[in-house]
Length: 404
Image (cartoon, rainbow, N blue to C red; front, side, top):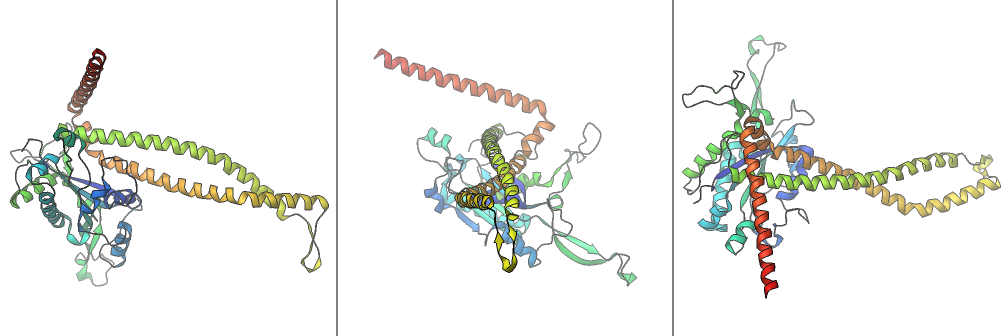
């Protein structure tokens, strides 16, 4: 197979409030997607190796309630969900048997994930088979689909809780009191030192040991696991964030750029809507003061009756008519405000998700800025050349029609 056929596994993390967007994508709960290459008529071909009971959040809450996992010491904004995305170049599966081969391949990849994070902590594992690879389809003149696997899990480490000096039995001090299954992204994927060929730690300019997230070594373990399972024809994924696979990086940059543009456009639109609502809310505040005045209209008499002046009666009648007419408008405004609040948190979650997904590119820019800069320059130049070539071909076709 081609040199770009690499086994790739990416690890991403999410806060509790930010998992909804990822869940709707993975489980195909949306009615519309920004990705035009998703073909819903093929979604029945998606394979669940583990299907979540209820939502991801409900499953987590259930695990906490049953004592399967512990949130002891967890901050409110902690990342409690993780996702592994397993991937190989689309052409690999197309060359080895397509859908059936991909199903077997990712079933074994799921077993690798079970080994890595613990089967009991995996909420969902689904292979997508409904995303068309447009570029390869156009190149080959037939539909080709990009098979990949999403695994959602809870990052858990076993933490020993020891008896402290407050224990009455001094013989127990320092011994293990209990072992809890603690949710912890930072401990599950702690930073590890890296070593050179002589086994010595690699140092940075300050003389400190270079450390990388332990999930950066997933590429090695995944490659070896799949090779031992009998799969061949691909290379190992890139270890760490300093290695660069230009074709992979180009794809990620393109995807991230498109998503950022869409989010920015949506944020601008929502700002305009919020500005419009703001003026309506100010009007509602003025109405509130009027309502207070209405509550004090009239003079109470015995037996619960209220005496109104002629002017008060006229004002109250007019306000009542206006109130009835405004009920529909107020209800609509309340719904719009509620929808906008929900949309804001959705956009915020998508932004945080994008930050996580672009972590490797940002880290590569920090560690190897010149290489990344050179890559961007090459990519931009290539894009310009392709655009010029398309313009030239279009002009050639136009000239041909004119001559006929």
